[in-house]
Length: 533
Image (cartoon, rainbow, N blue to C red):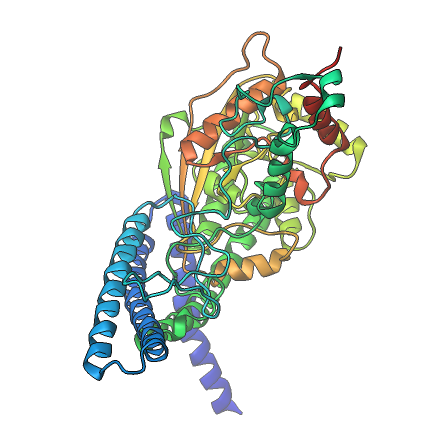
């Protein structure tokens, strides 16, 4: 028994010393805002591995196309001309294979060029099963495409004329009133003759919205241009060649056996630091010392949490970083948006009250600083929130308040309607644009599909979270400008800076049906084309 106790004591002393050193190193680096550069080096290595994988995927695709088209060509030749010699068939097959190889090479070059655009919308991934191939008998071979997919296109349909929007006066492809729509016709004319073209534009726009609308796509994970060695982004590339299989297995072991336990440990350290430091600060009386200590504790908390996700953050135009007072608004992709902007600045937070893991953090943060948590379904809560928001902004000693005016998570390809409440409180607005690189991990939280713990598990088993943050110049409401117009102006600036699509639709369409007044507005817009006499 004494020997066993000695072995346990020695083992514990061997383990506890590195653990304490690791803990102190994390807190020290987070407190001074420095990094050893390991995460950025890690991301550079990942890029080289992804490029290696992309090249081998293209080679494997090319071989598959050559085999399939060569086989079909030989079959067709055999059926059409049974008397052809073996030499003629071999020559025809070689010619077809060469044409396929040239087409595949051109496609690979286009994909490689597209891969350099880090923030461009991703194309659709090919599926291993169904694919339509063009006939090869005429000497030109078509590339295999997924069923229903169009070549060199990012969407299923192409909208050219009318696009339905919440504001009927902007129903056009370029966002402005379109000239030359179907002519106004009198009621008497309509009684004598009928032209289907009078309503075809609305019918066409409606069918296009059914096939592929602008809203639903924003609540699905962004698709990738090239595989990032995660089976959640593709279900068959890991078996396309033995080299990729080996790389995928090694990556799986690294992510689940090394990175996941390490990240969970760092996350536990960050949460423990937040709970303990905020609890201690909660006992201090309001003073400048408390505000300074809270700012340091707040920033250290989120710097530690950023390390638990291997986040690589790049900040631009830091001279516009919010400091005191005002409202900071940003586009919303996931709860970790708070981490991306809080590693350099201290904020008061406003948002929906959560339970579980997020609830622990919310209650811990609220002990030392004024944060606003509410229930979205409670009307009284919303009225109280607006009142508290005005009170917070009116006190210059308070830190700026961080708000995500979209009110829901969008997949980081677009910015949707900003709620006007954030822009009615007065004061300065600090816009912030956040753009994630999906190659290393998809930061979008689909709350209707994954719980918070499932989402954290996916984040901690991803390669890394790489993000660019742009601070935009402070903006003020112009004289005579409504809160809605001000919100749209700020939203446009954020979308333009982040390379995102600027949409007018309400993000709450993820949870509710289209409003009745929107339908009535479209009916009214169409009725204006009828000139009654």
